[in-house]
Structures are given as C-alpha cells and as structure tokens.
Image (cartoon, rainbow, N blue to C red):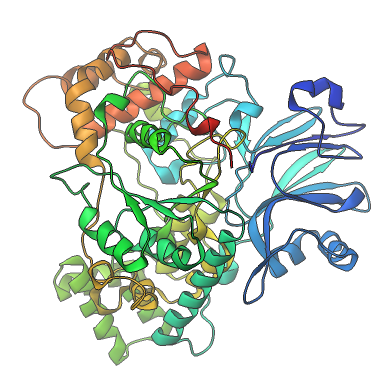
Length: 596
C-alpha cells in the first residue's frame, strides 16, 4: 500500500481531464472542479469531497475508519471540517466541498500526510510529493529559502526550496473559490495548552500511557510488516514497546558507529530482550556515502545529512519487504524536552510563590547542572521577558552577502511561533518545539516506497502533551519525566533512567575525514557560491589549518548536501563520476522496489 496523492482544483470549470495526465492512470475521484489521483486509502464523501489517508475514530480503543455513514459525512461537511478534527484523528488530507461550491483542503494536525501546493491563476495543485508539482531538471531553485534553512529550523516557513511550491502546514485549511485561495488555521496548538482541572503528575502519566498505547496500537492496524528505527533512546523505545505485543512482523533497526555516542547497541539490545523482537544492528557503511549525490532529493528543502545514504543502503540490504517505516521522530518535542528555566517561570506565573516552586528550581538545577541561584535568575528573566515571545536565533556562519540578507528576512514564518497574549513562556517554547517536529524527515517518496509513520505526532498525543504543565516534564531532574513515568515497567530501567543521548555525529566526522575536501571542492565551483549564499573565503579558511571541533564538518557537509540537492533539481539525472569516486549503487531505485 502506498500513501501518495495528487489533487487538482480549478478556480472555475473542470480540473485537468483524466487523459491530460495519462501517466497517472485513472483518477480516484472527480467532482465539480476537482480531480484526485491517489494510491492511499480513501473515504469517498460523494460530491462533497473525500478523505485520503489513514483515519481513526476518537474513542477508546481507537478504531480505524474505512467508511462513514451518511450522517457522519454530512456533519463533517456542514461543520467545514471541525467535526473531523473533533471526532477523528489520523494522517490524512481532506477535500470538503461546500453548498456554494467552495473547495476546502484540510491537512490533519499530525502532518503525517505530506502536502505541498502550487497556486496559480488557474487553480491549485496539491500533492504528497514535490516531484508531482515540479519536474526534476526543470525546477527553479528558491535560493532565499535555502538561506533561511541554513539560518535555522525556526526560520523555515511555508516556502520550499523550489520557487512557487509551498507547504500546507499541519492543521491548516486551504479554501479555494473562483476569486482565488486563502489559508486559515483549522486546528491550533494554542487551543490545547491549558491543563485540565486537577491534573496531578500521576494522572498525567497515566493518561499519557493510555493515549500512547491506544494511538500507536491503532496505527498497527494499517500495516503487517513494520520496521522501526530505534536508538535505545526513550522516544523510539516507547513506540517499539507499544508496537511489540501487537505486531508479529516487527523488526528493529539501530545504526551503529563504534566507539562513539553513535553506538547504542547496549540500550537497543536491552529493549529487544524486554520486548522479545528481532534487532538488526549494522555499522554505518562509509562506502554508501557520496557527497556529490543528493540526500533524499524529494524533500522540500535539503536538510538531510549524509548518514541517510547509509540508512538507505541498509534498508536495501534487509531482504524482506516492509509495509511501513516507524520512528520515534518528534518525541523530544512532543514530550517537552526543555533544558531551560522556563518551567520555573511558568510555575511562578501560574501559581505564584508556593512551596512547589522551590522543588521545580531544584529539578532544573539537577537537570541542567546549574546552581540554584542561576536557575532562579534565569527563571525570573523569562518572567520579565514573557511579552517578547519566542526568540528566533539565526546561524549565519559560512553564508555570503546574499545568503545573510536572505536569512535575515522576515515574512515567511510558521504561524505557531506567534503566541497569543499572556501565554506562559514555557508553553510558547513547547509549541515552537512542536513546529520543529513537523519538519521531521520523510525517508522516501510515497509514490514508490512504504510510508514513514511517526506515531508520536498523532493528534490525541499532541493535544494531551500540550495540556500538561511544563514543570511536570522536568520533575525529579529528568527530562521528559511524564513520558518516563508513563512507561515504567514497560521499558528496561536502563532506558527509563538514561541521561545520555546518541548521535550520528561520529559517522558524520568520518564522512568528512574521507570526503570533506571533495565537498569543499564541489562547493567552490558550485551553485551556492555562484548565487552568493556561501562565502568562498569561509570555505577556504575552513579547509586550512589545524582542525578543531567547532562544527565546521557538519556545516560544510550541510552545504554540500544542499549543493547536490540544487544540482539534482536544476540539472536532472545524477552525473556519472563524482569527486569522491564513490559508486552510484541505489542512487535512484532503492527500497522503491519493495512492495507492501
């Protein structure tokens, strides 16, 4: 089963005829101004639209919905989609056609169904893949959007790296009328940040455990053979623990970089022993990496680094078909993995000076390693600055003049970063983290590979986590404390109590040692330097002198990944013979041959 779609909506008259897109095959839906081509599950709403993707009923236990009765369909359409958001959840995009012929496209709050759009004078085209909206080799790169990506994840807005293609954010609703189109928020995180009455820590942990088990369990009803990427960290382990008893075909994969914090076999092995499932633990293969080859070029922006080449290679070696790739992506964000004084500021603003305030200060001191005085001072500073809102920090290192100007531009920001008046600073930070989680990486094009599922982003989980007070998340001096408490007994103590965090940075350094000079050479004669995004003098300095661990290896390889992404879109097929001399194996066909 694939989870891709392409939807055309004409401002007037009919959308493109079926024979105009013969390569897509017959359309899955035609009504009024709309045409849909889809390989994903679909619920037909008749001449009032459709829901494409996975849908679950909001009940306990959650059940998958494959059809709706007439009354349910009418309620969803009549409420303009608000009933869909209130009574259901999943990973979907819905088209709702009103009585007046207005077409509204709603993307669910999880963002698990990608949705990109191209708007022009004739109408709107929406798709789950960038390549359905722009031709490889013919895309016009938006270099300003790339500069903003280099500046930081909070600077990324609606624009993608291809001019004219935007993203419809999770929870947003695009309305199309004969006079044009506009976007509104159908779902907002700010509607869920107030805690329920009398929610103590134990109740929060119990509610989170039940919600996680229910939502993740519901996703297992969509797939038989699941591969989950685990790190031995808390987030992916929670997903695996919820999957394990219900998924006979579950396999776990952890990538290993020996001798570094990228070797997490100790934790992963403890997890699979507890769950009784299979583990593959291959070592990152340097031969799979070629810095001249784009990394996941179907992404809206080139924010994937080269360790994904090695992950792709390992997926191809698995030898067994996979129905879906699961991950714990977004867990740090959803579980409010804050390491600042904002929980102390929140507790003071919410309840004033009470005995519990001292305990939160102690918790933060234990968590961050700071002294009590420093924690209190930082917390008070956040109270005083609460009206400033979320501050966006920009990284301008290595950028040229044009890149620096573009990176500092405002106007294309995520709407969730604008907090309502009197928002607690910790809640503003939590929502900003949620916005970052929505930028999680989609491993493969959905039209030719199994989908990636990040179940921690499911709407009921997100809404519950937003409502939990921020100081609960740091209780006992542990980050993500509510999630840890929720899964005590279901996960090994080794993972529940783990304080360290794994990273592929050791492998990234090995890639740089082997191919860093080739990356710099490619960049010096590349598009990004030519466009003024990268400073050639910075590249020269970065390649000279004694090496120091100052992050240049990550920055240079991030620039190289973007350079290869740009060339893929502008030039088309991957050129034979690369500066690194690495092979092209699997450059275009990976996994993609696996059927589910």
